[in-house]
Image 1 (cartoon, helix red, strand yellow):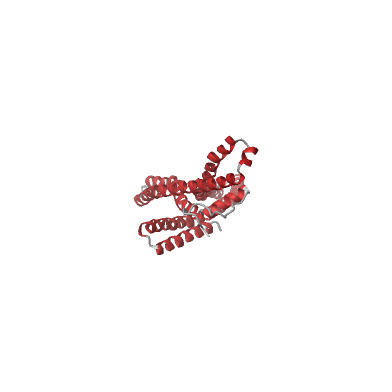
Image 2 (image 1 turned 90 degrees about the horizontal axis):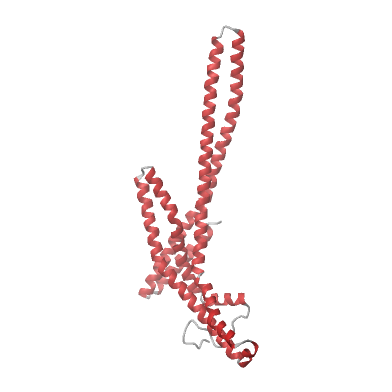
Length: 302
């Protein structure tokens, strides 16, 4: 039974793990709500920053192509990403500081209890100054480990989202290059066909048998060259189609990630309204939206 008056401390009879790794997990288990809140704000915050260059590139493409609709749509997307970043920045920072303070305070409480249990025996084993230093500085570093959870989660998701776009763009560029090479080969094929037609025409008009045989030999040579050129052009077109398929496959997770980020934004909005209105049913809606966003974010990679 809990006897403490502050909800973020620990019970007097609770014994934290002595192993460092297990202790960090124990801390995370005790403050999972604030860690989850930091992640819910940190992922959209970092992802909105990571997607800005891609949106700017699309807007520039629309400007170059004189496509007013694309320019307006992607300009709006840039403004929307900026708005998301602005809205989530404060929430992410608030949860980060809260995670830091809670983890630091719990560690300070655990350390203080251990020092009191050890009593004078502790200072006989290590200098008093070292004890004070550990108490005054080490638990702040433990707090820092939880301070960065929101940014770490956001950085991971934004990297994965940016990576899918970069990979898709690389495959798309390769598809365009292969298509251009195939077009060059087909132009070469057409040039050979023109020469072949002229050689056939010349062979039909030639009165000298030797010249006629020479033109017919050229016709046969052009026919063989055309077969090789056609084979190479078809191979390049196949490579272009495969690169396009790889591009679509690489971009597939991005669609799920976009929906996932939207659901997380809805969860954040509902959670904020819950704080203002104290309506518990809104909290359930925020939890459901956050859960759905997390599931879609995971499903994007399967």
